[in-house]
Amino acid sequence: MNKNYYCVIMAGGIGVRFWPMSKTETPKQFIDILGDGRTFIQKTYDRFIKICPKENIYVVTNAMYKELVKQQLPDMQDDQIVLEPARRNTAPCIAYANYKIKAKNPNAVIVVAPSDHVILKEDVFIDVINNGLQTVEQNPWLLTIGIRPSYPNTGYGYIQYNEDKVYEKNSAIYEVKTFTEKPQLEMAQQFIESGDFLWNAGIFMWSLKTVEVAFQKFLPEVDSLFKQGDGLYNTPDEAAFIQRIYEMCRNISVDYGIMEKAQNVHVYAAEFGWSDLGTWGALYDINPKDDNQNSIVGKRVKTYDTKGCIVNAKPYKVTVLQGLEDFIVVDTDDVLLICKRSEEQQIRQYANDVKLDFGEKYS
Image 1 (tube, rainbow, N blue to C red):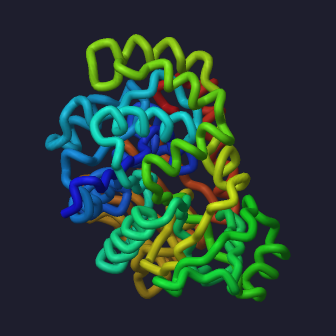
Image 2 (spheres, rainbow, N blue to C red):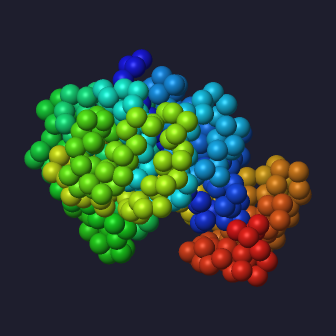
């Protein structure tokens, strides 16, 4: 295993679209939503210890989730848990991790990945990451992963690649033409028909030296803040320094701040059973179904004349459903949600209304 390979797992989001299972105190990355005994962050860690030495894996998360990370990933040392005092999107969290890693190994080659994605073909995924890390070790590129699209999904960003600019050593790696944020359905259909667009998986690979240059060129105001901490990273003085500069740090994604502007961006076209699992609908799409197309998590669920529903019930509670079609049913200890699948975009509003009417503990 290459001692220069590092992984940064981004785990600071709230995941409000998975309310009421995902709440501010326990976001979706710390929950076993699939009902198979492992949370999303545990599954993500399990994948990357097959690629990087376990001491080279870092989790970037909000300071309030420190104990959750320690409970769920007990092998991680405190200095591998990178605590943000505030949410500032992906560029600051990556910059912070870069400087911590640089203090230990300036020759690092890094993969950055979200903590809450589903990967069904893990062997293929591991091959793609290993090949990608080797590629950015040899080339000064910013490499992202694009997923071969199977339908015109309007919830994903898209990457257009240049079919004529293929990497000579790997025919799945192309130069990137454009990035497009979540498109309308008609545009997404055009993307699929054109054949040169991929879903943006939000997984990045680069050498530390290459991404440093990119930050200095495209996000100098972010880079200069973290550079002030040289000599403080991985010391007792790090936390106070980070607390101070995060108040001044810009809220910006690495996609918008760097990837859409840089000229040395390439994409690895892959297919490994990926979903960013951003919504209950996305979970319904990948979960097994019964004969009536119901996706059920829960050991004591009975359905009658019920079709096309996604059900997440407590394992110890008997749940009986009759006469429902295309609904989301989620039962937690303190909230019961029953919502049409076609209206799931309203869940964010429901969560906010419940918080306003009944208190923060429900959000």
